Length: 544
Ligand code: VG1
Ligand code: CO
Image (cartoon, rainbow, N blue to C red; front, top):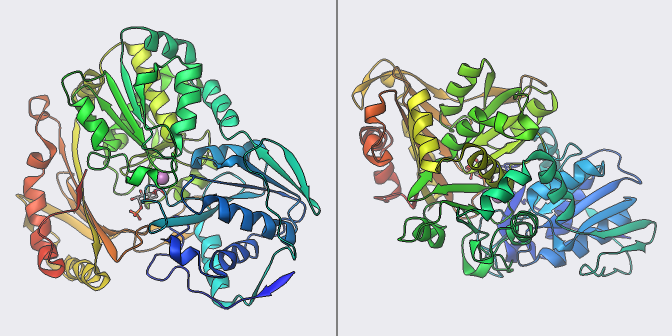
């Protein structure tokens, strides 16, 4: 049946396509809103008649309802099979794994990642293509265009409710709905990549770890993989029960929002290793005893130690990092004689490079790391990678990181976020910096010479597609960088992200606090942006 509808502007106030659509639950609950988006997706992805669609989400409020809506629409639109995670649960990397394994046409992932969940909080949806990765801009642009002209959507005349709690296959009209185990395919993939025997031995020794699932989607995955398969003790896993409001928390694994875990690893009886993941399981934070590993360093260290992992024992093809991510990975790539690609922010830009075997490891400063085993960033994968390295090297996290700095130099790094500022003020900040490009070039700032400044743009080396305005860069001759970028994933006003980086080769100067090491760059950023004046904020909401 076809139901008449009105066009919507679902991406209003949001950059189309960064990570699909994210809005307040109440917005998604409006009549026809989710349906318009789903129908617009279906009409933008080509011929899927009789093909397989994967559906699952991070378990947040409105997850189950939206899955029922999608199943009914998938039947009416002609899919042949839908694979749904049990209880509607699939972490983002697990969804990517399932899409690839069962050669699905694509998948719909219900998540707003780390954004808070609950009736008054956020919901989100995104479409992933057959390689398991986020739809490229060509498709997200087409989806957006469709939402502007849509006049009807297709669903069943008598809607069905599928029992999502039981692993079973049922037939709905001409379509099979298979409720699948949310964890097993993913767990099997992890086991094929890492040295589980070595990790099991490590966890059976006096080594102690603490993993925080933050009441989000990774709980069930951690239980099966870390506990049942690898023998982690009960008390090494925390907040592993997924809740539809994430326990009222903000499951963003960073020093601010994962405070419970941070207090433990900086406390008196600190474990040797701490880790957390985000709402949909694609991010990771890595900690040692009283020690924090920046995501940029983590990517570089994984690359430098890749051969300790069975899946990468013959080496990696190359590395890719998002532009704001520090240059630490570039130094490793250089030393290994590998290419290192610099892409715009967002995992979708890594897909082509991985499909073409140009890169094996990818990472973003925003606590995202992953490899070509799927086409999403992968939180638990990063945790297992670190455990594999720790098991093989038998050294502490801190030792491994500081040795890495000695060998490659340290890229001091920090990101300052100004969340939910008025959109006009955010645009003024960006415009103000841009207006000074001419005078900044060649001038002295923060005690160093500005080499150049620009709006970052990217031409995909595989399909030549061009992405403009991906962040303002101020590049210094000594390798330091100041970057201003507007977030594409917020749901309230605008979020300004300020990224700061400087390089220190001297091993005797590598033990400073990052904020101290970057102090001059932080002051300079304020003076060239007038951020405080335009936004009325005198300090960032989050510093990582
Ligand atoms: C943020 C991060 C970006 C990440 C994106 C999606 O985007 O900066 O690196 O890819 O979130 O992450 P933005 O536009 O707000 O800076 V997630 O964990 O899930 O969907
Ligand atoms: Co996420």
